[in-house]
Image (tube, rainbow, N blue to C red):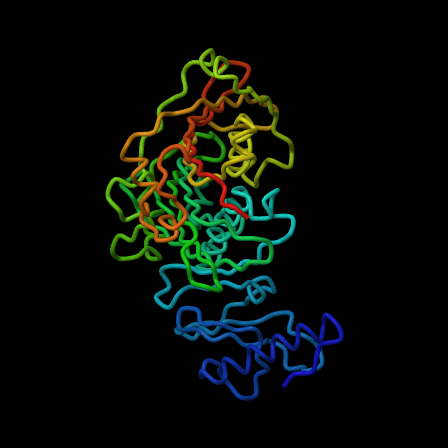
Length: 386
C-alpha cells in the first residue's frame, strides 16, 4: 500500500506509481529499467518516462509508436483523464463537475455541458496529432489558413450532473456530404453508466483571413478522414429525431413584445472571444437564454437546445436576443413523454403531457442593422422535485 503523499510532488509520484503498477499488471509497459509515468494505450503504443531519476517527478514522457518512432507527451496529456478508444476512432474523457460550474439548482448549467463538449472535442483532435491552435487544424488547413466554425449544435440533457459528480463523454467525427463535418457526443454518469445526455454538431471550414466559408478540399479531407468510423455512427440514430429539425425564423418582434417577453441587449466582452477571434459558440447559449421569461427559469429546466449559427459576432457588435413561444406538435409531445431515444429521458418525462413542457423559438441579431446571427429552439421540462 502506498504511503499518503505529504506534498504535491509526492502526490504526483504516487499517481505515477499507481498507474505504473496497473499497467505492469496488464503488460503495457516496455522495459523493466524504465521508470513508468502515467501511461495509457494509444494506437498500440506504450508510454514511459524520459528521466531515469526516481527522486523527482517525471516532467516529460514519451510514446513508443508501433512503427518504432518516439513521440513526446506533455504534462497535460499525462494528467488528462482521457484517451482514444481501442479502435482509435473515438475518444473518451472523464470530468469532475466543479462548484463554479453549477447553477442555482446545484447542478451543472447547460453552458458547463457545452463547454465540456467543446473541451473533449478539442482534446480528441489533439490526441490524434492535430494542432492546438485554431481548434484542431490539420497541416493542410494551417497552410491554407483554414479554421473550423460551428454551423449547428444540438444538445439533449436527460439528467443534469450535480456538483462533484463525474461524467464520461465520448466523441467522434464523420463526414456528412462534401461540405459538412459532423461531431457527435454521448454523455454518461460515470458512477452508473447511465446515458444522461447526447449531442451532435455540424462544422464547416472558413478562411481565417477572408472570413468566408470554403469547400473541403480532398487533400484536407484525407488528413482527418482516417480517424473517422468506417460505418456511420450517430448519437441520434432514431428516425424523426429532433437533431435535424428545421428551425423557423422568429420574424415579428411586435408579437414578442405582446407576449410580454423581455428583449435583452448584450455586447461581446474580450472574455467572450475565442482563439479564432470571434465569439465562442458557447457564449451564444447564454445570450439566447437571457431573453427567456424568469418564470420559466424558476419552474422548468432545459431539456433540448438547437442553435443554427449564421453569422459571426465580433468584439464591437451589440446583440439583441428575442424569444417567443412555439406551439408543440403532437409528435414532439409524444417524443418527450417517450424516450426520445433514451431510457433516461423516458424516466424523466411524466405522463401528464404537454402542460409540463414548453418550447421556444429564439433569434439573435445585430442591433445596428437587424442582421441575423443565429436562430434557435429550446425545449423545457418541469423541474423535478428535490
